[in-house]
Length: 101
Length: 101
Image (cartoon, rainbow over all chains, first blue to last red):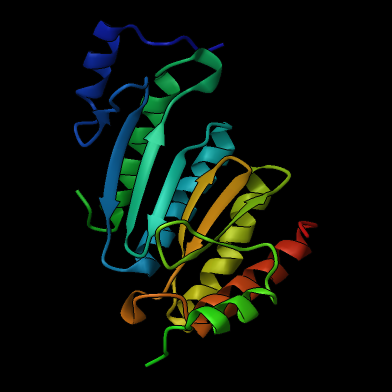
């Protein structure tokens, strides 16, 4: 099983995904993506969903028109793991293809 | 522009979509759908997204693995309109195809 990152490892790993912040009161990371419109927002979600499903590691996410709020954590590990950092990084890469840096 | 439904009309319209409830403190309707797994939950979302985009009327929704929480309101009208009831009904029909009654 993948292991929960301790604080120092977590802080280091988060430097690789600077758009993400740690969630207050919960071991999780979050980012809000804002796209041009619903088409792009849901296009992003669809691509991210395929990555999530392939890796069997899924986001908690909320979509309102052109925004997508994502929270990532690893329930099995009780905190943030490498899998969250990897999914965050993959989502960033997909968002960049929609022009969201 | 589509008109906000007054209370009596709203209550009558909601009888046609019995899985939906009015949201406390806000003129909106909500339903939580629970599917078998992420594949079915996101499959539902994809089909619903196409309906939403076609009708230019979009949900607020949150997905956590196999659950999809949906809130519908018509921002332009400041409340619940026929468009919300229609989207609720369309989402119910899609969910039924995934075996969710």
